Image 1 (cartoon, rainbow, N blue to C red):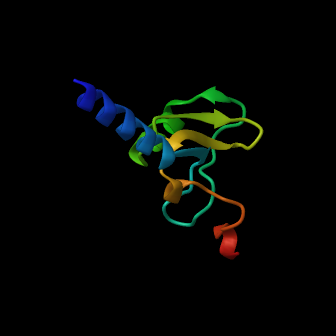
Image 2 (cartoon, rainbow, N blue to C red):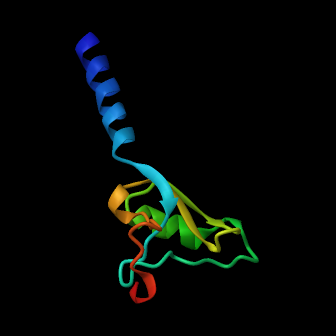
Length: 88
């Protein structure tokens, strides 16, 4: 039982290490996935897009006018440092 508990704790720590929060990066052009800024907050489209990219929960972040995702794999997050949107 102690071994099982140790394995569960170790696995949960690894999962946390390899997941982050951030804007969803689109598959095709590397831009942020936009959303309707008039309807910020919980958003079915953002939740769906987050889940298909491996995240746990997504919503429309009004200030950024883009979908924000929690527990997203690092390679699916839009980053300003590596922005390829618009031919940059």
